Structures are given as structure tokens and as C-alpha cells.
Length: 435
Picture 1 (tube, one colour):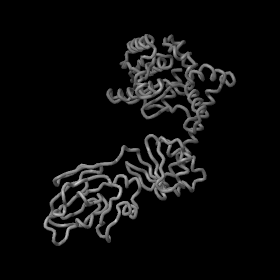
Picture 2 (cartoon, one colour; picture 1 turned 30 degrees about the vertical axis):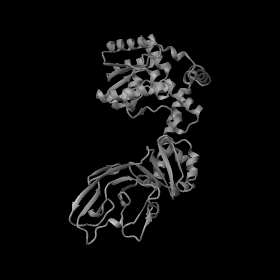
Picture 3 (spheres, helix red, strand yellow; picture 1 turned 90 degrees about the vertical axis):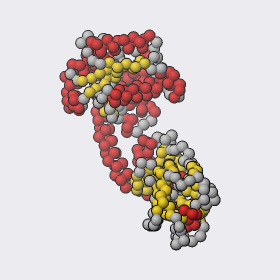
Picture 4 (tube, one colour; picture 1 turned 135 degrees about the vertical axis):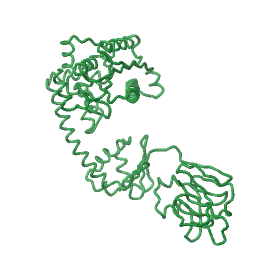
């Protein structure tokens, strides 16, 4: 096995030879064998063991076993004790999800603190088959059918092509001891039920099932690359603008596709959306309709879809009684005394200081707001003005207003109120800029 693992690393994971590695070790068969293989292959690695405090003294014995193994292999060992049940209750997670979150968060911290490059885990081809069956039983797409990725950011799985049977045979042949987790014998969890009841039956039916699954996964990953290229092409046409805060999609590009739901699924699943037919329906919905995931919202705005992160209420208000710089969610309003006027721009305006009445207020727009837009005739509702200049519904939510007690002075970044403009009779000029 050691020759096969060495060849696999040389051909597919050669960067491991030059990296500082953190090996996630439970004390069980798979991770213990991986530790011995890393030592035999002269890789630069440390061990990291999580004590989840879930199996009383058994958890402590596992930790002691790992510490002794680290001494035997002459490598550094990091251990951490977690109150997993309390964390699960606090965050409303299952024990398995809680343990996973605790484990990988700690691993990432260790990578940063100890200047390490990658985390190694001992997932193998049996684990991959279990994962594919779990995904298939719950309903999945091509991502779920490709199983566990061999590389996922800083996580690397060098044993993924090898079976549990091969790993166990190596351990027995080389006199390697390991710990048995008593919870693995229980069929309470779906993964264990598949491991003990379903997969042995599949292996009886087809002894080559693991090899065949690996071949299938390879074919699906090749197909996935075609899908990715197709998605890139659609997104290149569909995205009309992209900033840190929002992405705007041209609806007409989605309507040109024969199966828009398939593309919508692949594009928006990463933002937490699951009701993909609702997004399809949004293409023909009235402007202003929106749907949300836990983290993002999609808004229909005329002929576009606008994707933004969900924010806490954007409402903002700050009151000042003297001319001073004002911090806002959009930046800093800077007040400067000047002696001449340049052209009013979206981000800066010139006003007659004597017309300002304190207190000044900077706030979000309010229902019923109106003003006298500079250069236009008469009074206009703010909502109508923003609609006329085609401000998106998302952008409208962010609009800030500089106002006196009874009048709008400036729709920040859009238009000065005509009543505050500089005229020939102006004696003192204030420039206001947003930076």
C-alpha cells in the first residue's frame, strides 16, 4: 500500500511533499494508518486530535492513545477538549454537525497560528460511497454524485482512492494498533446503517463496486467541468454589473435558455436558495417582488434580478447642531468653507450657508419625502424622482437625505435641492462632499 500511496501523491498531490501538514486524527483505524504512512513517506506533519467529550472515559482514552502515538512517531500533537453537547444546544445543531463545525474551525485556527499549509483527513473510498448514497437518498445534483472532493481549499484527502479493506490489511500486516469508536457500531445514524447493512450487500452483489464508483465519479467530474464552462458563458452574458454589495442579472438571458431552472439551480444554490422554481417564477413576476434565502435576497427590478446580502434594517439617523463632518453608512459627509463654486456633482454640492437651519439631520428616506430638484421645475416626490432616474429598488433602500428641520437639502449622491443653491447674493459658501 505504501508504494501505491506514494505514487498517488507524486501524480496527484505532489505539493504535499513541500508542505507543512496537520493530520486530523481520531485514534481510529483510518487516521492512525494515515499517520504511519506520512511518517514512512517523510512528510512534514503534526497531529491534531479533538476530544468531543461525548463518550465519557472512552474519549479521554482516545486522547491519551493519540498523544502516545505522537511520541512514538516523534511528531507534534495538538489536542483540544470541546463541550460538544452544549455547543450543539446553543447553536441548534445536531451533535454531528456541531462536532464538524468545532473540528474544522479549530483546524483552520491551527493552520494560521502554527503557519501550516494543509489539513489531511483519512477519508477513503468506502466513505465516498457512503456519502454518495446519503446524497442520493436525499435528492442531489451532480455535485452530490461526485462525492467527497480530494482537495477542498486547505483540506486534502490522500487516502480517497483506497478502500477500508486495503487500509485495514496494511494495519494488520504492519502491526499497527488503533482505537475502536463504540459509536461506530450503532446503526442510529444513517451513515452507520449504510456502512453495516447496505454497503456489504452491494459488495456481495458487485465486488468491484468501489472501483466502479471511483470510475463513475471521475466521469462525472469531467462532465461537471463542461457544466462549469457552460455556466461561465451564461453568467458572462447575464451579469450586467457586479459590486461587493450586489450582482445584477439581465432576465432576458435566462429566458433564452432551454432549461433555465437547471442554470438557476447551479447559479443560486451557493447563496443558500433552495426553492428554484420560485426564482424561475420571479423572472415573470411584477417589479418589486423578492424572495430570500437565509443569507441573500433576489429582487425583481424591471428587467433585472438583483442579488444582495440580507442586511439588518438600513434605517439611519444622525442629528448635528453645528457644521461638522458626519459619519454615515455610505461614507463621511465632509463640510468645507469655500470661496468659489465648481460644478455640482453627484458626490459633492455647493450650498448657501446662510440658508441652513439647525439642527441638520442625515437619515434614510421617509414616506412622503419631497424636494425641489436643482435644474427641474417645481416640487417632486422623492420616490417619483428616484423612479424617474431609474434607481434600483435595492439602491433606493440605501438612499440618505441631508435635511433641515423642515426641508431636504441634498439627496446624497443624487441631487441638491434648488432652494439651497448658491446665487449671486450668497455671502458664504459651504461645499459638502461624500467620501
